[in-house]
Length: 349
Image (cartoon, rainbow, N blue to C red; front, side, top):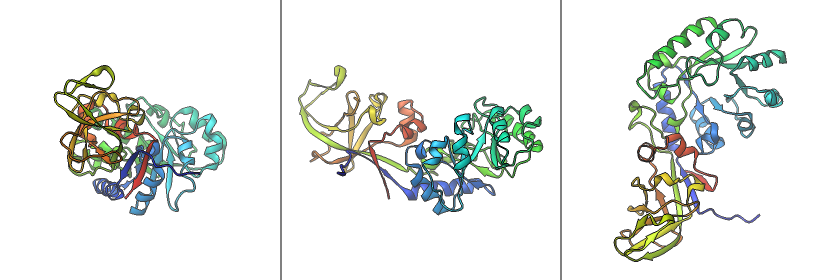
């Protein structure tokens, strides 16, 4: 098979990833610090993320589905893997054969696991106010979990990125459930929850976006490093005369003779139309390249008039600081990372 290089690449820093995990582990105090690697490691590549974090000392990993779990086989020695969406009827073959634990999140899933009759350990999700996945408190404390070997009892904070009274209510609810439901470990805090303090850490924290350079709360500002750096190769350099327009809808008009670089990049790659008009751009050898016109499916243009001798085949680095781009575009930091498509080749350094 002929190896064909992609015109898009995602430079990934293992040093930044590990640094972020170590900071989160320190904030977790005596609790173990795990890692959410669902959505293919937030778009960075789950297997590589697991390998780098396991080498740094992380032992607890979380994916969303059994398909994601299967893609990580065989597991590294000493690694614990949990499947957050539990065990549906169609998942039972995978749940019996893959060395990962389901996070049981409904009465139906609990009964299904009990009926299997093997006594295998599981995790359990209880709902303390998000109304997404999880048993209601009265279900969890009313005997439904009797007979289960529960490794980790989990809940999920709905508003941890805000200074909300809901955080305190969920903490109190989780503590009350934990007084009744016995498990080897208890886990409540996500990335933002880690920043809420020791009361939320319990035995295990489960950061996600913060591992990958996202800023979940103000307490983490300046503490986390960017991990992903998207780049695009220049497909064409062209001169645009004063008064001419660029792109669909003629939304951008040249106010002077302008040097435009057209890249192999567009909304099919996760670089969306909403970036236009936000001050978005890229850089080439330190020179700013403002985005011009609309982003199309797989072509985007940048103004390289002040960049010097830019040429076809050169690589430009997108401006992609998660917090600032999120604020400008209206996209969440999660969307910015997980939306980067498969045409980006991933390179770890």
